[in-house]
Image 1 (cartoon, rainbow, N blue to C red):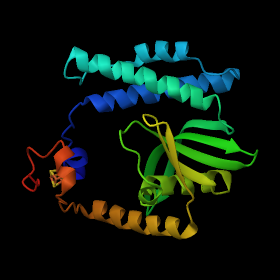
Image 2 (cartoon, rainbow, N blue to C red):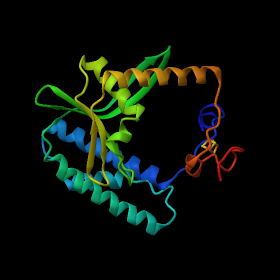
Image 3 (cartoon, rainbow, N blue to C red):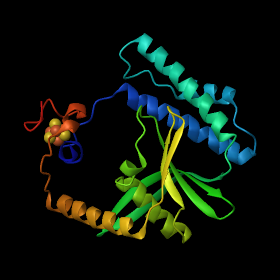
Length: 224
Ligand code: SF4
């Protein structure tokens, strides 16, 4: 997948859940930034106005499909606003860009949201619009979240008390505490990935993931 996408630069297919997720993400970003700046609670009216502005009909199979998705996005935003207005923590950063140097390679990323609680402890959230929420055990294998913990430690000189995913469709936050050992293991794994990229070594790993891979129609290794 990596080779097709980043080396041969074959574009991936547009799809509705991508556009859906992007629109909801963008609305939440703008909404929370506005609210943090003004100190006022979030409103559903502003959320719907923003959703209309951000909505991109490309990638939907039909008008009906698009209409259902829009209604679903409205519902997600309503629930998010109710939840946000009850939060104990305060937003510290939204869409925070970072660069992490691993084995001489700069890894760029963006953290959806960093909160502060009890005036000192940090929390990291990654918004998700997926239909299924992962378990805590599954998130413990998530390199991205563990790297976020490292980024926070390097930026604020302390590790977040929790990092996790905010599943917007389910209104569920699944949070984990990241240990030093987990950070070291992920760094070792990242180092080996970086070395493979440097060597131009991209062995195919066919499996269940092929079903959702945009390159399966051109890939000789795709698992049918
Ligand atoms: S079809 Fe499977 S093996 Fe081929 S690039 Fe996609 S994920 Fe990899």
